[in-house]
Amino acid sequence: MNIQKLMKEAQRAQQKVAEAQERLASMSVEGSAGAGLVRAEATGDGTVTKVRIDPKVVDPSDVEMLEDLVTAAVNEAQRKAKELQEREMGAAMGGVGGLGGLGGML
Image 1 (cartoon, helix red, strand yellow):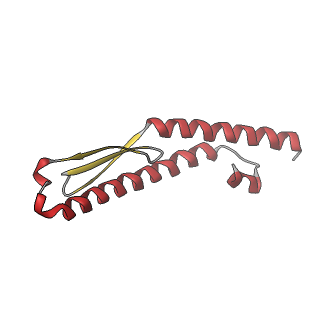
Image 2 (cartoon, rainbow, N blue to C red):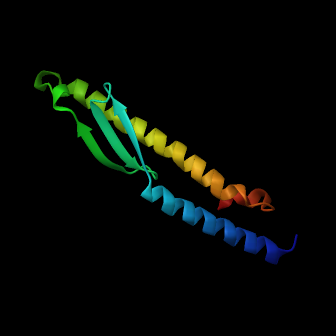
Image 3 (cartoon, rainbow, N blue to C red):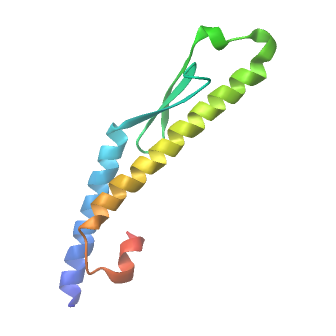
């Protein structure tokens, strides 16, 4: 394979990755805990954008439980965002062939 062709494929791969990153920033996922009483929303790139807490779960004498529920909801949202990232990036890189070991460097 000649170097010019390799460089063009690398540029195409970078463009596809950039497009996937833009799509991820506009997508959202949600994690929940406590049977949906605590919900966390995150963008596809993992940024938590919103936390909703049902007033029924707020107990001033058990703040630790609420903290645990918020943590669990945020962790689930970020896990889902990571799965979304893997799917989007995999799809973006799926059509790029001939890069050999360079694919992981982009």
